[in-house]
Image (cartoon, rainbow, N blue to C red):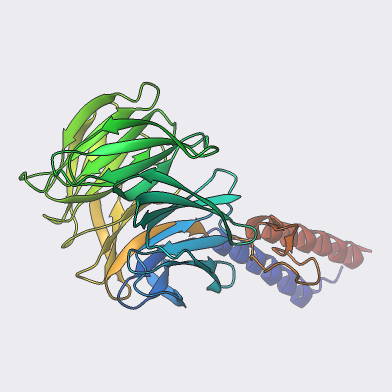
Length: 384
């Protein structure tokens, strides 16, 4: 029996390429907002390199939030009255949403249908609601007579939590909001000069970062989400900035911009169990979805530090743009968000304002199956 060796090798090569392509689609990408460059660095954290940059379409962007489906990123800034919308499939600016007010941050509803924008108006803090299918402002509702700084959403979407900036430096509060009605249900007392709030993945706890500028070190206020009572106060490093929960929920990382460290908090005991030295003035922190690494932005070094969460050590850094600030992470197997009115039904096109969810990983698997089927048929021909 004669075997077509060249033909088999061609099919084997095709299959290998399919496998490699499929694996590449699962490579996580980190998006780093470069405030002074007014753009976003797209970082391949596995190979520790910047893949490309995306123009932000706004002055001095600071914060970034990625939609639950990984299609879009919303950029906000206290220096701009516009929300910039990025298409993460094409790595380009998709739209600009005028707010007429500066904004502190963005959170998405669990379905991704709505985006909530924390804004400051002449009358105080307010939340703007955006329809993410049309990128249009739906409504705005007041939250506080004081300015607000930062916001979080419960995993089930039932509540929003906004940080109030009181003029009295000894007072700090979290406004608990019903997003459907826009009603402030109650307020929870926290530490002073609060800078960030995040809700535990299970929805049971919230951590509020308090800079406590009058003290040698900052604190984290732990809130019981069922009772809205303060469960604990945790002392962390100097001038803390941001907090992020490990995907497993067992730990939280707090960046301390005053001493160049990250405090590691055990969420069961609410105690600091480790301190990681990073770089000068660390700001934002985000975890890999698998929890294996954490990524920290360093504005003074123009870099993104990579932390191995198993050893709690820094394993290198990636050079990004000038004054990196907000950081977010998404899988590379994303849909492309195409504006409404586009003809044709391509993968990732928009029908009735919603992206068609065709994952790059599953598409790669489909190609693999097709290749295997063709190889089987080719083998039958050789045998017969």
